[in-house]
Length: 114
Length: 145
Image 1 (cartoon, one colour):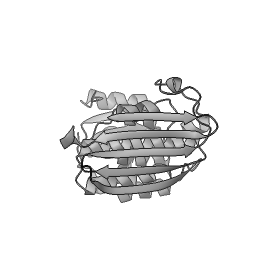
Image 2 (cartoon, rainbow over the protein chains, first blue to last red; image 1 turned 45 degrees about the vertical axis):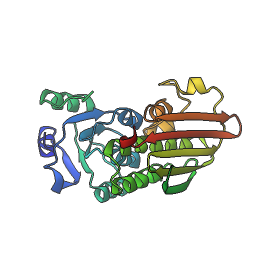
Image 3 (cartoon, one colour; image 1 turned 30 degrees about the vertical axis):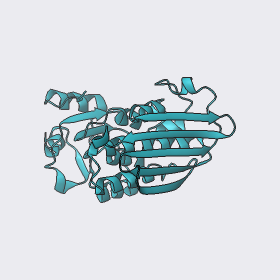
Image 4 (cartoon, rainbow over the protein chains, first blue to last red; image 1 turned 180 degrees about the vertical axis):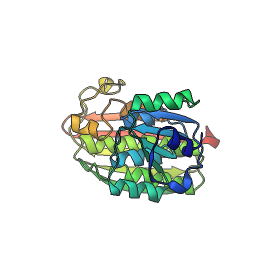
């Protein structure tokens, strides 16, 4: 699924990476624990989290995740957005909660990849 | 014969949450540039990042050393800190002594050491209470596995 479809399905604000919304994601991982994300990293996965600090972007960078979607309207600081921009990580923010976000993506064919 | 191709040593300060993960990201970028296969880079990244976070969360300071040879990557963390009283317990997934503040940073869920072990071909952990902890991880390059 292209990130632009994720944006449309979950009515996301694009925080950075608007020029990379044609990136394909194949799976998703949802957690506020970065160790959970790192426990079974799936390259080309979308990270879904409410954790907005700089470690979310560093985790995406280390685990080769192309994009992060912050749930419940949460959004990171400008410094974190800048780091994502520098590393070409797409950041999205949705008003939906984690459960609903996951449900919508799952019903459109995005699995957990494990 | 083992040929050392690259060595990097970083200092990490306890409680430095802002910069935690920076060295792991830097090393990941270097390994990518060297065309190390992506799965190996991923494993090194997970080991280094979790190790960095452990130092930031629990220790006073540490050195983090990466050594790339022609057949493996060694990640070594030597910290000065409280040490680990019960290593078997610390290795159990889900066991954690983290505070709420640590969990707010996305870590401290009791998965750090298990993640390091899972991604290592060779793993050892030595600790002395009141002195510090040493984590030694070796990740073999794909072509040599």
